[in-house]
Length: 117
Image (cartoon, rainbow, N blue to C red):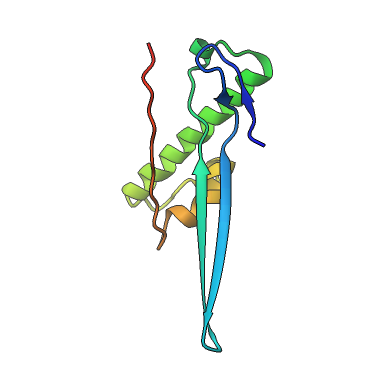
C-alpha cells in the first residue's frame, strides 16, 4: 500500500517512493544463462515544507523525501560528469538503484510536472 496524506498543496500527497523490481532469467542451451532486471520507480514528489503546511511526522517525511530526491540528483550529476566518486550511499533510494543507474544499465525517466501558484 502506498502511503499518502493530505497537505495544503495536494489532497493525496505521496509520502513514499514506490519501487517494483522484476527479474528475468532466460536459459538458451545448456549453459548460457542471461539475466536482466527491470525496476519501475514512482518517486514521491518534492514539496516545499513551508508551502505544504505539514507539521510533525508529515514534515519529517517531506524532509526525507526531499533529501532522497536531492541525493538522486547528486548521483545523476556525478554520473553525467563521469566523477570518480558517485554518492550512491547518501540515501536508501540511490543505494537500491545504483546497479540500474551506472555501468551498462539503461535508464529512462518520465517526468510529470504540475505548475503551482
